[in-house]
Image (cartoon, rainbow, N blue to C red; front, side, top):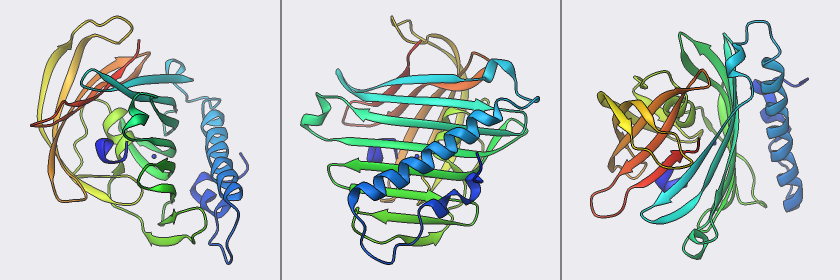
Length: 264
């Protein structure tokens, strides 16, 4: 998934109505504004949640920035704002391809999620991805608690699909305490079987400008949409009171591992 796709007055669970099924073709700028308005609504809901009395103070306004690297090349930057209360959580993020990587491939995306926080585990309620890439053109995926709507191309119509099973992959793999023990993750559109293969203690080597130190290492086997099994290594640690991935590594056999490393 990471490699193949590199997600106050309106309830976020119903925010997909901001992006209704179109009856006619709409200009490109309209879809962009509608998608961004959804992101803004979700951001407001997340910000409002941190004002509740049950918010854990150290989790307020947490921001996590990752450098994406393939071998010696910096591929881009992944940026998250994350908030969590005792019972709810939400995040807003974006990925920007680096100038060097753009010579080969581009992917720009914004994504957001809101859900319940139960027994230190996320349960996704709503999820959105708005992206543009070299091979996918313009795409919007909006998932709520009942279904998913997909817009493939600015001048197309929304397709309605059943809600995928599992937890959205960002919440599951980047913000779950310890390691994710569920059997499926999703990107709002498709579900991917996943298995926690091994849990171990490790230490991220020191690198200037990045998080280092003791981590819980989670090794997963995950199936891609093309039916290929990938190995995924996620290193988790507490940062500012939040369990967060400090490194995500997609294990490849014949090519350099794509790696996301948390700046610190």
